Image (cartoon, rainbow, N blue to C red; front, side, top):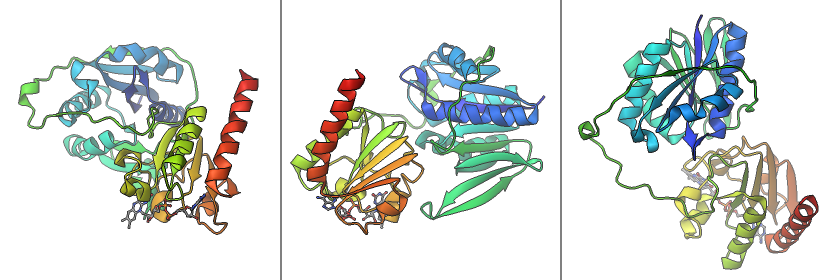
Length: 327
Ligand SMILES: Cc1cc2nc3c(=O)[nH]c(=O)nc-3n(C[C@H](O)[C@H](O)[C@H](O)COP(=O)(O)OP(=O)(O)OC[C@H]3O[C@@H](n4cnc5c(N)ncnc54)[C@H](O)[C@@H]3O)c2cc1C
């Protein structure tokens, strides 16, 4: 029986939301093919998440536990994934699209002789091959791409699929792994954390993004307060990063991060194509802008034409009231 393998990233001790999404998609594909749905986890204590992966449909979990996986370093990740692929013999490996995955996907394909479909928005088995839709040209177009062969590696954009529970029993297989750090030719010197908000942007379910309409410290504080009451991550346009108001790690778009939250609120953002490329996959898009012709309204689910300095205080107060009633 063939295997569809989902690669799972662990964040703060739990599988990331994007990982559970790709695992759910792997399970759907496996169900359609009469294949086994499996997951692979590289983490200091990989077996700790096996039960949760079974809850999302993993019938088999390959664990590779080593302290080296506390941070992302390409070479050990590649070595471990290569070992798991040799053991599991999957026909497809589905990854959540991320910077780390982007780093290893090409090298893993070379090592394993696989075909690669990177950063796709949908993936399915069709006529004996793997077909995927891939946003191209700053997400202005979708390209239908197809890969064939014994092994296909696919990375899927966050938010493309729902994470759906499908409880099952998982057989756990620990893969023996050792890696001599002294052989590394590249070292990770320091991880510089983001200072924009406390919630991780790429994995956030709610994002409040600031644009050039946020002109000063008072506007910045309103954005931070809105993010705070919503438990949201803070993002921004490039214009705001260039002004120094938010760090580069907050930038959303073609040359920044791709986000796909349940709710994205764009505050004083015009909706340039390079920005929209990074947020158009969001489920609900709210735009607040004084200009009714701003292009952000073309992609918005709800639009508020108004001055953010007047709209945000009202919005914050109303959200606080709703939360107080709900509490
Ligand atoms: C190669 C390349 C790559 C790029 N990559 C990115 C990227 O990754 N991400 C990105 O964001 N940009 C990127 N850009 C820049 C992009 O083209 C835009 O310049 C940028 O997104 C504009 O940011 P903005 O919407 O904040 O500013 P603006 O376009 O200046 O828009 C500000 C908006 O705020 C509104 N506004 C003003 N005052 C108020 C108020 N008081 N209340 C409410 N609304 C108000 C205005 O009506 C306006 O629509 C890239 C550009 C290039 C050339």
